[in-house]
Amino acid sequence: MGIPAANRATPCSRRNVLRSLGAGVAAGALWPREAEASNPKAGSLPSAPVAVARCNAYDANLPSILRGLSDQIGGLAPIVKGKTVTIKLNLTGSPALRFRGRPLGNTHYTHPRTAAILATLISEAGARRVRFVESCWGTGGPLEEYLLESGWNVRMLQSAAPKVEFVNTNALVNRNPVSAARGYARFPVPGKAYIFPGYDLHPVYAETDVLVSMAKLKDHVTTGVTLSMKNIFGCTPASIYGDDAGVDEPNEKPTTGRGTVCHSGSRQPSKSAPSEINRASDRSQHYRIPRIVAELNAALPIGLSFIDGVETMRGGEGPWVSNVDLVKPGLLILGTNAVNTDAVATTLMGYDARAAHRTGAFSACDNQFLLAEQLGLGTADVKRIDVRGLSLKDGLFRFRSA
Image 1 (cartoon, rainbow, N blue to C red):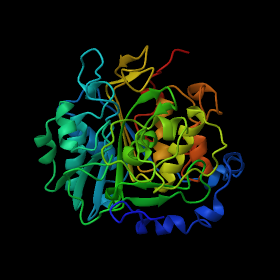
Image 2: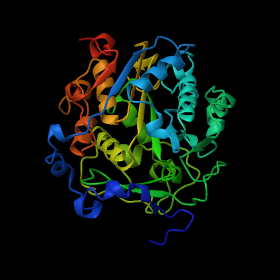
Image 3: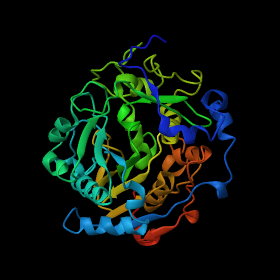
Image 4: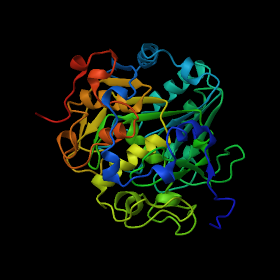
């Protein structure tokens, strides 16, 4: 394709096991409706324990509550010991957009204290290194600067573990060293992709042994809810998938979001990355984004899902959404299977995680969890999930009135 070496995507070798599960992207990709017809039997879908705890404030009790959650799912050491752990933060939207003047972590961002404490616990469990990552809104610059803009104490994060790194995954051009990797890494969607057969992502993800998704417990105007799975949508670099992405090659100075490529499909990503499977498919964001979320999670599996519902907002994912409001569910949720964990979180919000497309919490969109089930990622049936700690009944906090 004539891609310069600096931008050429390289295969992600640690995904070979995933790729071997199917006949390969080229041979196995089906049109979206055909893929939906091949839903695996419910009993064959993965299910892992999910822990829920009451937590009413980001105070001195937070470390002990997080330790308790970790213990309830079998401990962190079996997951992270000797590994490179990448913590994907949720810093959606510009730091300048605040709701009622409140700190970002108390409304729609990852709370800095949860990030620091989780990094400490991961390090204490034997992780070789901890990396904080995010595709920062409208910039390819250093993540540390973005965090400072967001009101974070970067030194606190730096001291959370012996070896902490920060990477803005929106572009390759930033001041964060990432080993010797010079190009994007390609992550094929194993099995039957919906929209894209694969994604070109920052090489930090190819160097990741365990991916941690730190999400907020929130509604979302496009996908119904936004939890640990939806957070992975933010792994896509705006240099390739942004509105001002280069036509042929990535634009290493992105300044926009991903509306035209991902939401509306009115243009394709940079030609250096895989283009869509079917450009005649539905262009609605309510069709496209749930499918992109599901297949991204197949290509880039989450090893640990953390959902913060201590303080958050309902009615939308950020202050740019009209009629959002502050809520304090007082919940923390942790699990090792993203579909399972998000299904439990969705149930705690008062929704049916397996509601049919365009119904319930997903009244305006297709259900990302049903789409993930069709890819074999995990069950969204809470009756088949071992919920530990606080029960679903005792933790219920309805985000919408009945």
